Amino acid sequence: MLHNTDSGYGLASKFLHWLLAAGIIGLTALGAWMVDLSYLDSRYNLALSLHRSLGMAVLGLAVLFAVWKFVSPSPPLQAELRDWERHGARLTHALLLCAIFALPVSGYMISTSAGAGFPFLDLFVIPAIFPRSEILRDLAIGVHAAVAYGLLLVVVIHAGAALKHQFLDKHGTLKRML
Image (cartoon, rainbow, N blue to C red; front, side, top):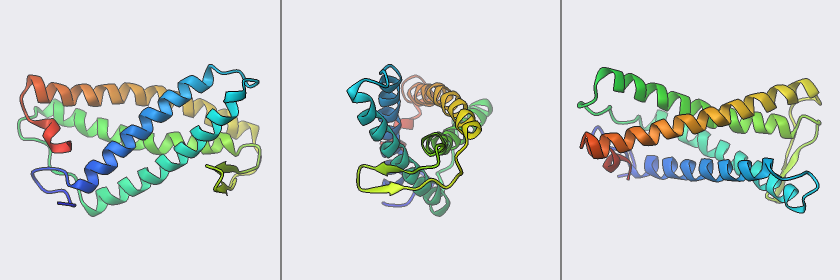
């Protein structure tokens, strides 16, 4: 089943969810490694190029994911959830969706703040659409860092809640997304 149903997520939602999760994990690991590298380290430019390209790929997936959520809405939350858990789930999902857009957009703004585009996997150049701006760069750097740390917290909450509902509450939550 490709589409979501009232009882669970369809294959498309599952595929996009786990592909986005893998991208976010990869970007987080690469970003954490990259910030510890000196600009003079020979690996820095490769890490930066990969981080930029993967970030743009995640942005494309995020757009596809958002469109898919409109085409095939998520199944209702499980009936066993308490009111505070329902509110928490909705808030967590909204924050995740905002972060998977805000991070690549702010990363793009950082990368193009000098007024030039950057290569996507050496296949083509992603053009700069904003004029050269140090103010925009500084703002984007702050947003990128804050959202990255916030995303880590929300991902831990999201995964922790899924594991709690699966193993402590025995709601079968993971079956819906696996």
